[in-house]
Image (cartoon, rainbow, N blue to C red; front, side, top):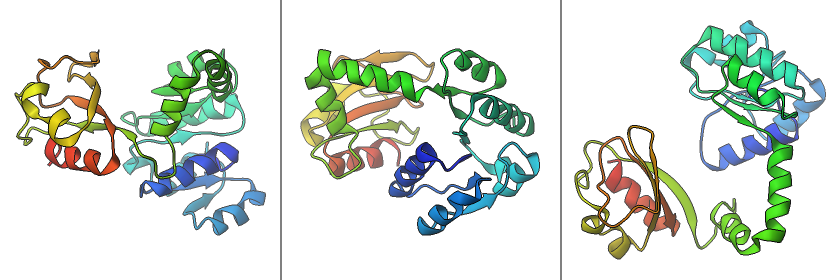
Length: 221
């Protein structure tokens, strides 16, 4: 995690809830007490420094997150990290809409604009309040009645080769499959009962957390 401002801190808290390991790089000394308070593993220094990226473990990282305060800093960070490890899957923050393309060209795999997302969220609160209520329930940090999860299909799964109807996911686990991302990258929304589960697919399901855990054990043993 590169940056421990408001967004970086919020992301770290969420990742910690999911028991994911991460390291923060932060050069603002005023944020050190907050990281100590949150019991965060961190490296003091400039995130755009290759030496600091190396110290934080960029060579073994899977998904660096660039959430520095300015777009130029995030662009330079993405370029530096990608040059060091071209296989990295990088998520970057863009404050300005016109910077999104630049970040993608620099090597960011996913670019998020908080202000655009916030504006759409406020508009949908008026236009589609029930949809927003459902999504907030599904993505709530606190324990909720339902959750949404994506689960990869392992070659060892007993459900490989079965249709959704044959799998019994709906009947036995009371889960709703809202999408299947096929191994070729094609996304099938609201897949039919005859859709076949194949190794390499990613299943997006909605339901109670305990049942989602059961499905994960079946699909990705």
